[in-house]
Image (cartoon, rainbow, N blue to C red; front, side, top):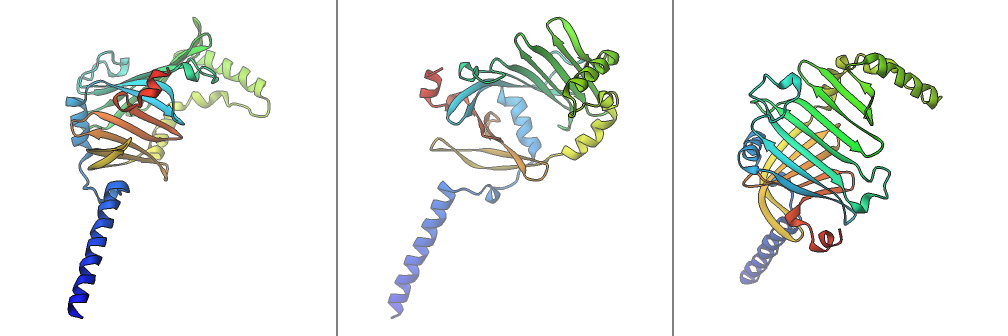
Length: 271
């Protein structure tokens, strides 16, 4: 009887350890991985990560491509940051592929930068975009002190500009009349600087970094998982290798951003 109980305990222990192994291998829970300082990963990203080519996938199809390039020194800083030598930059650029030309903005291309101080706090954000034969422009948001700088052009004509508030007011007034019931408030950009602070406070993310494993196309990789949670439930995940290279980004609607080396060959061949 005692021998029988021992045998049963051995079998139960084996089943338990096997289930734990299967769970950790195929159904990992990132919360069991140890937390590490986000600054450690970002320092690796700037010091060793280097320029990374990424593919934008949607529903198993190649939607676009982008490049992310961490820079420890500013190469072409916007005017408010030209005298600040302690700012780091994460530059990104991208475009939609041939498969996306059926979309409304199928020829859209973009570029921009995140600017971080020595403590890796966000000090500014810039985003520019271009749709051929339609419009091009950029927006620059300074965090402290708050400032909004923008310019939208159609061809060579400036349509909206923070440097020409009268022009912006006229264009928005005309747009408001065209929209009828869905009216725009022409003055909402005039006090935009005052609104940046509360907006940033509202959008302030909760960032957590863990050192563990993640799965990509059947293979498992050791690295870092950085979770950025904004507005309650929305969570963006960035996956870095142990050398600081950005490998994957998910959490943006139904899009998946993946390092070019991990994109299936049949997708790249069909482009």
